[in-house]
Length: 333
Image (cartoon, rainbow, N blue to C red; front, side, top):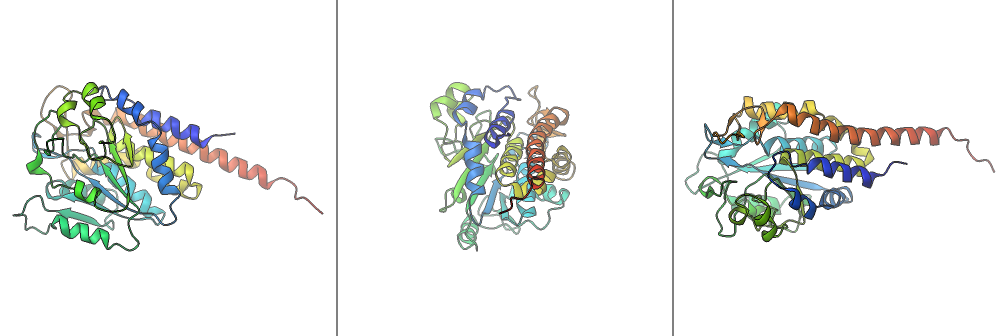
């Protein structure tokens, strides 16, 4: 008999593989079990309504732009939630918005609401003040049950948002952690380093001892469930895969959004149409390429395939079990 718990544990192991070789193993170990718990919190909710926060601007990119990790994962989450009737919206800030818009459009998701938040007081190009968005979220009907932050840089202990190199990038990012912490909703953080919103659930001493520049970059903004992933986009797929196992009624529609083909479609749109950048593995400036954190698509595709295959195998066993049960003779009185 198949075990959903065992399948989710396998997905968590795939998700947490240190594909970037940044020694995230100790962080993955500390966060073990959070994937199942985060998925269960959504699956068990009677009326989930979800907001997603993303966008990590690489000011040292060539050209400077939002990175390719984050928006594709946010779009995959939104696509799956929308497919099963779960209300959702996405929030990012002005500099990251073009990549988020391009990714949504490339995935055929133009109907997903997008809140674009001003970075500074001088922004007057259709962006919204942070407080206006927070009021909108608090007035949402139904109320938001969950807020998910995926690959969204958060403030370090000194209050300054810092990239993986420890450089202060606060001027390019609105303080979206105020949205994350601003309501009674359950919070889920998805990250791959420790400098993202939600990673404050990991001890500072552990991040400092494990990650290059971890002492400086660790974000103390905690979440109810922190999911560590080798690449944050993959963390989104892992969450959806786990949900498909916990809620069989969602499985077929979720699996169509979990395919490597759809993941590539979203990444391609982010890069081709939004010019999202990916950091190189040789220290070169991040540039637009079909890669995430310097990991090319041909190395990422098998990861998505494995998650999809795990979920598909469980669904097939369920179908077979149901078929066998339906063939049993009906008891007669």
